[in-house]
Image 1 (spheres, rainbow, N blue to C red):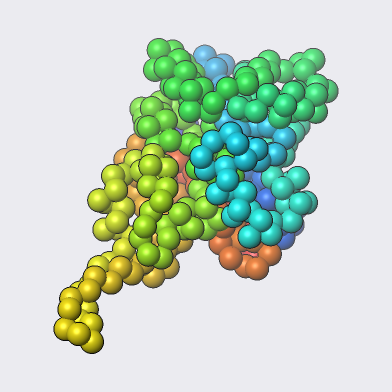
Image 2 (tube, rainbow, N blue to C red):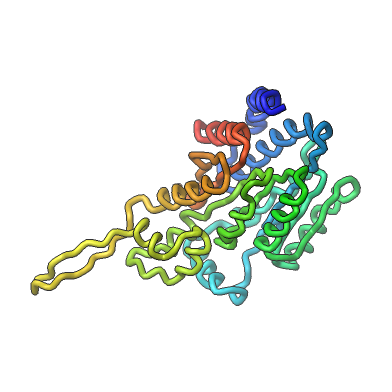
Length: 318
């Protein structure tokens, strides 16, 4: 079964990954276009085998709401994130376009998933999404869950370990660093294809301040799954320098190309959980051509990553 399955994947990928429309200029559209192409390829392949092997397909969106940012008083990072977004001057239309995966996935014109789970911690966002997607409710098994994404990933993982016929396509694309590394680890040894948005430039790089003070170290360790000592050694160098008075002074310097290093570390971490990971994620830029996110795919199926790589390379060649 595996050889035929893998061969069919290779044949399908070449046709499915051709761009249906020209890639958009906004990072939000680029992300959504890439993901929609992958979902189409995923369903095209899985639909050939799902009945024969009794697979049940799950679509899981951990941050599926309307795209509004959390209010300032909800958690410690929110004040910081508000400042970062104000400073970065993300256009309102970019925020509005940020969430659109749900409509695209539900609107795909082929046999879809057996179950759709749309998770959002914010109740108002969940209600808005439910209203927006009400047109799809007649023929889709859709569940809207007002809960923390990390908690729901844990429940998904438990179900997938208990019921091996389950296969999931998981999208985790928060603006910030809400996804704990411990949650990603729970997906190990499951039939999961994961797409995750890594806030390399817009958030993480700024938390790795130039002086190495690391005010938000708890958030960083939770996000990377690495301790403080490792992160300091990975992102900073320390050298000794003599002052004019002959005293020795420690100079802390942040590594060069920190955004690239952030992406590399996260990809290396994903490789500890999944057998195959996109070596070069889709880099998403803001209007000033600064990298703000890396969009990566991880799977235990090699050909799934071949498809993801084709999609990414098609974008990067334009």
